[in-house]
Length: 97
Image 1 (cartoon, rainbow, N blue to C red):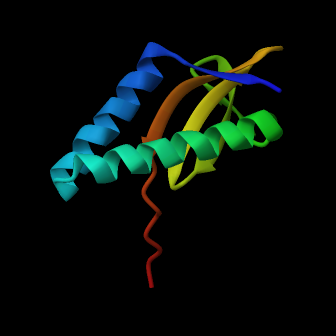
Image 2 (tube, rainbow, N blue to C red):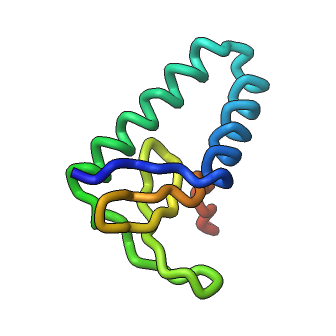
């Protein structure tokens, strides 16, 4: 079972998501539960299926991307850890009619 570690940039991206959600909902309790559920889902996925993400290349870094609870997560796999690089909300593309 792999452990999950977050880079400072990943922690900052989650903090920015929290600030945005608080501004939208005005409920810190909702945001805390939402992010706790997100982290639990991410941990469950990556500890069970660490290679679930699609292999991608970003700025000479080979990493994986997986979508959890509507958030894209970039991560690296190390022998004992999954290292979360960044979490971001990816809007769905609008298809022209």
